[in-house]
Length: 349
Image (cartoon, rainbow, N blue to C red; front, side):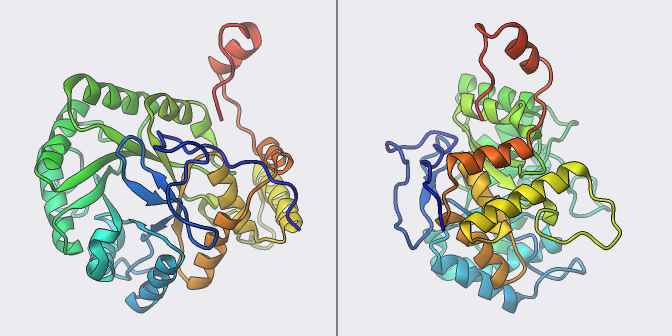
């Protein structure tokens, strides 16, 4: 039985309507959220497609991908996330065929930066040359003439951020990209990027994508407060802790204490809600105002994940999970909290 529930957390970024900040949807479908300052509405759960395709030697064949996509759409999902390196490009090809008949009804995101051809030194990185070539190839594989969201997949330490941002701004002005996102970068780099785009009138950063789960909470230290400050939406990859929150550990395996505490707390809350641990883990991420990206390889796994949208964790349940998996904020946050409490409250969660 579901206990008395607290209100869901306000989405990170800037919603365009008053709380609870859902702009479309009902109890039977996924609700829509605003992606930062872009104004683009996306479903509160995104369909990740790293498992789409078998060209890399693992993953799901296209018939399974089609079933997963159909179930996601039936649930009201509109946000589909892929990358140019997923399944050696096959993921984008499959996604392109799946969305072809309803392309303009969806928000399709892809990524660049990670190398796709080891024989070509410019197949990876965030230079203008790499960005231009990567996006053109992604558009061809997807069978579309624009991307709703283009993520920089990771920080390229060899390319000045100004060069990357100017190239991305050109793509937006050319109509090939509608919104820009940054992934797998230090918070200070993203803050620099957000500031530069604002000062120079370039296309703004709309969102960031980070690893976040009950087992990966270091984003609490700098990344999430930074995103709140700049009005950026935050998408979470691997909300199930790379599967460690829901997969049984091998026999005789040594399980880290933090993982054991998280799994135990997750099981307790799941029992209270008569829900699966997977759905509770994803609901916890949503309660912290993030957009989970679902990585699934079957319709059953997708159903478990989608169930998170129908769960509301009580304040006590959230506290129980937060306490079991808390991460030390470190310096300077703990110093400010302990030695200067009147000057700086703890960063928001």
